[in-house]
Length: 305
Image 1 (cartoon, rainbow, N blue to C red):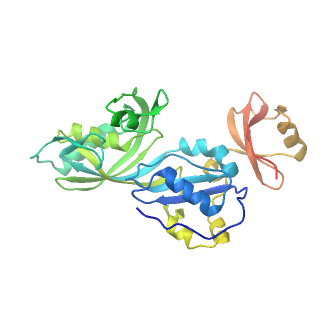
Image 2: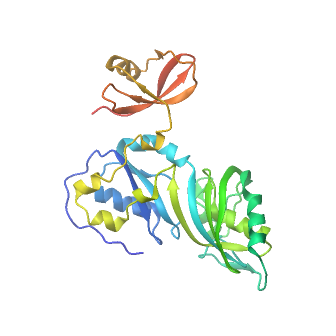
Image 3: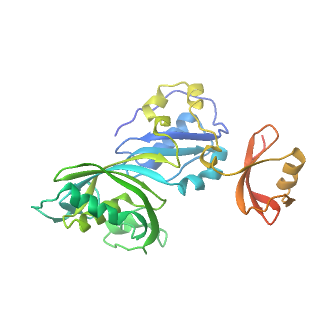
């Protein structure tokens, strides 16, 4: 997909902090979109939190500046997808870009058949990542090895399918809403469902609806951002601590914060063993701490202005 390029000259790159929720279009890589948006915001530092295949669309959180320090929590967050699977065909990549390697010409499935099979994929399970993926083997992405005829399988990984809902069904297409844990490959899920139905299947379309509880209506397309002023774009940013709002919060005095920045461990009257959000007396988010055995120590602190 061709996206407009911005030729407007902005001031030099700025130390920007926050999260923008991008609605990734089809046909563009996650990194390609990241670089365009980084330029658009004139940000010094940026990174995305979980790539989407070029054929996939939907939510791609991009972290700027200090927000990259909590990006791992978005990578680890649950995600929800809307996926349409094409029945009767198996491809080597598990999606519409792949080479057809098997077909079932005639089959007769009912909605009851499909729903019964979907129940098998609920809950904790082991999943083998596809050979066409960005996972690496000895420093090389698996998809590069696969394209070179050197397909390498990776060990099965623990995942969890929290919910799987059949939204529509006909003899060739099924559309599902899937809520799942990190590390889940929807291409593999659809391929496995096709095998369980004895008809094969590949991903026809895939859209990520949400990441870590971020609402879909908070997403912006690249075109929408292009048509805004820089100040308007900045108003679209999510707060750094939004993805971790489920964590307990602690407010600290200035002296306590200074000690933590020196690497000191503070006595803290709590018997909990957990990660906590840290705030100053003005309720400014300053980072993450670890509570353990009545003590508080630094896990990750943001920079001081």
